[in-house]
Image 1: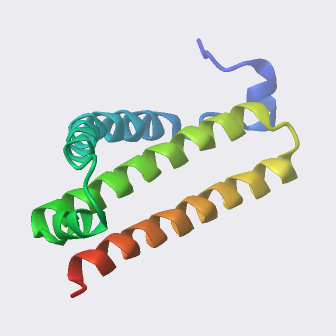
Image 2: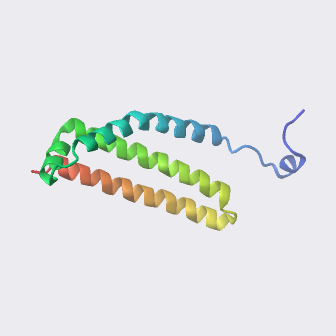
Image 3: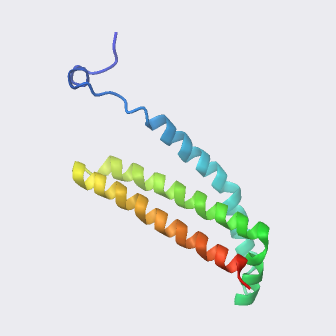
Length: 126
């Protein structure tokens, strides 16, 4: 006995086989963000009251720069996955959905590259 609806069988439509992967990737990125976000919040709290040069010196440390890049990448990837789910669930028109999904990926990529570039510029600069 098949669990597919008669309409699904008639159209040949079925599972896209993508939902489980998306679910797990979003959960893994969320778990990775827990220690990274805690590290970031406590680190920035310790820097409160500091000047620009203190923050620049902090980012200049290799361990800090690598952890910042990991935090930025994980946070923006997790954000992109979450926005993708919202678009897929609530945008009705197929054309608008495709355009929104492409814009979502493009904007998240631009922000990620810009933020990582900024961290690397400060970390590797004089």
